[in-house]
Image (spheres, rainbow, N blue to C red):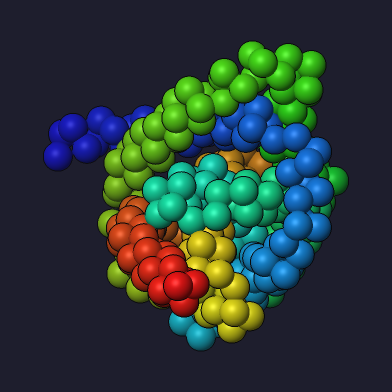
Length: 305
């Protein structure tokens, strides 16, 4: 317990000082792997991209609002859940899609598009959530313009810098992509683990109130991605990709918003609980996704004979 107490004492430093820089590194690393062609690739698979974007940008926030109302969540938990839902995708979903042998180009394209679009949607969704859920005396003073500016520094500017480096130094960027991606992913996992451990007291104190809500949100959003992709008869590789894109949120961004942009640590509880829950469901679906993709490949091979 003494060790946990020591970690808890570092929670503010980890979440306020380290997480934002990890987020910037994550976005710069994503930028190293992107070109303008990745944004244009939406033309190659318009149906898959449209389904993924609608599910993330509309379905996720809607699910968060509905669940928060159904569970009658406390205001801080409800707003935190909306913040989490407003931060879809990220480098983590790319890693899970790669591990499941899904459609990685589609994953990268969706991550690139949402990284740009959510800079504009996040301020709107947060202000809407504060208006719906925050009661008298519970409001967080927030400016949409300030949120937009901060989101630019956390996401779009590092992303653009990574893309510019790739444009002007393509050979060096190509060599750096994979080592950077792995290093950033491991660093992000480490920092998120530190964030969870250092905030274990807050997570434990709020798990009875928010734990089931966050678990249901995690399972529901993965089911939303899977169901929407299957309903439109997409190939299984794209079904698995969209499942991860919709079901795995950008935790680093959600934490940076709560701790740095809004300066309201109580709004990070849902994201911290999610950080403890999501890896188990995502890793389980990696195994399921591999089997589904292999099964479909076998059926296509048999049909082609």
